[in-house]
Amino acid sequence: MTALQVDEHVLPVTVTTPPTDPAAPLAWTVSLRTAYGPYAAEELKTLPLAGLRPPLTVVVGAIDGALRLAGLDHLVCVNNWMLSTNLLPAWGGQGAEAMTRALVHDYPGHFLAVRSLNRRHHGRVLECLHDLGWSLLPARQVWIAEPDHNPTRDQDNDARLLRKTTLGRVMGAAFSDDDWRRTADLYAQLYLHKYSRLNPVFTPRFLRWASENGFMRVEGVRQDGGPLLGVVGTIAAGAVMTTPLVGYDTAQPQRLGLYRLLTALAFEEMRRTGRSFNLSAGVGGFKRNRGACPEIEYTALWHRHLPWTRRAPVLALAALLERVGVPLMRRYDL
Figure 1 (cartoon, rainbow, N blue to C red):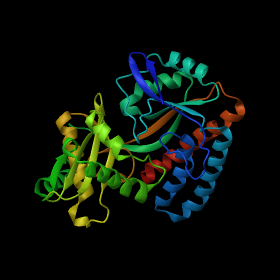
Figure 2: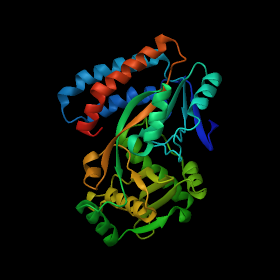
Figure 3: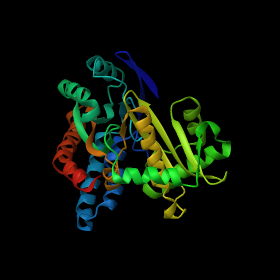
């Protein structure tokens, strides 16, 4: 980890090298090879058309091998909070050319990247980086809701469930040590056990730090002072918010509507603050029914200082993602 001043902003930077232990892969939030290789292979399992999975699995395997040979895990990622969605400050790309020169000088053997860019929130940044020669790689489809849109029927139903639930609400400031351990476990139940172990792992210590220092607004629900049954954590930058922390007890009966309750808490925060809400990727139908609209998210990648043998696989990947990846993302809400 390091930091970089770009224009008037100080941005966190991760500097990645390939893992030495194959049994301990890098999370996709710090490794583009993981994101476009092993993590993408896991995403294929969710495709409704089973017939597409075998040929796409072969393609993804070939991509992973090519990216490994290209050394994509030698990566410097700017504004990387190591979360599923990185929020940018109010930056329009000023100083990007000087930033690129400085990073190439300091890390001549690394790719450079900026993750989590979409045209609704970062149109000027994407245009600026593209004009400088950065490649724009489609990453995934995210969902964005706006506070001034009229609530949908499902939003109203979620809000009604939140008003009528017998579960009590509790803010992170009132969490005990056991609550923070439970928070990390609830997140793991959903994002690591149900979804993918290639997601970032949150420790109780980090989550408590994030809450106490104002980095993340954490809220939970519980029954009569018992253990937490669900938690949601919100971060914000400027006019945009997102929820990198969501977790609930997956063993509880569906009638409790834990995921709906946590979604209602997040939408309540969206309307309270008046911020645009990036709901990240996944469960597209659920999010569409709550008024969110899809946007393709991009990773900007700089590789012009590297040998052609390392650049070629990335250029091929960019072309494949535009022609095949984006249509699949839009059709199957990946």
